[in-house]
Image (cartoon, rainbow, N blue to C red; front, side, top):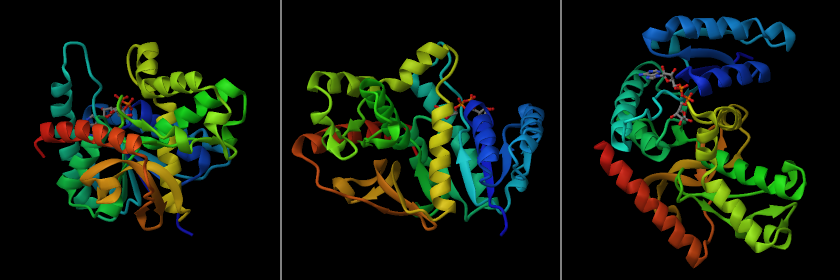
Length: 311
Ligand code: APR
């Protein structure tokens, strides 16, 4: 069987980590694309990971490039291209720059790999994935944003740290936008099916939920120069693998809602079934009044950012 081809668009901290993890997992051949200024660094990263393969028994091939022609026949494209906010730059400046970058990526990718399944990580996530979808014209089942997997994984991590139970037996669900207004659904979170509310006192759950909301910022503060990259990369791989292996995983992802949860025409974090058809469906369920209100609130934030993109 032919190995799948995975394009990493943006080869910075997340992109480089993706290359390492994908090679380790032997998931597919890898092409790291970045801007011409850093093409040699991408070639270096590719060669470095190539030389790791004998030690893990991996035969996948890697290359670094700045030429979209090298992305022909891509099966999965994972987009982390963008810049992080620098001192003196406001949110709007950042958004404008990253919209410019995603426009370039979308216009190029549709020429060379119109059938790729695209996983977007660049921030502000919900607006960038929306822009990619609009600009590229890709079908909605081929475009998804990585956010909820990370937010839910952070929730699981903190519950495990609190209780000492294995992360494997902890289920947590976070819906909504990838920001402070995300919607952790505590009611449906559990330890091996036992409701979280029966395992952890309410005041501690509230503390954990608060930490989940600001977990990205907590890492930004610790790093000082950038944002999280190990966990985001692993989450994107989970989504890529669900597609390539037709797993029908149900993963919270930023997917295009067309009526689900009362949302129309926006990408937002919802339980998403990923299989060989890409985004195969959204697993809708009945929210409580409070949960729906929280989701409506996060939607307003997304709508505002999307309006600012001008896309
Ligand atoms: N085309 C391709 N790559 C680009 C482009 C472009 N037009 N513009 C910038 N890049 C590249 C940069 O050169 C850099 O190598 O995107 C890469 C971004 O890497 P980092 O700055 O290290 O950022 P990283 O930590 O990887 O995060 C990337 O993912 O999780 C999100 O919030 C995060 O939006 C950020 C993105």
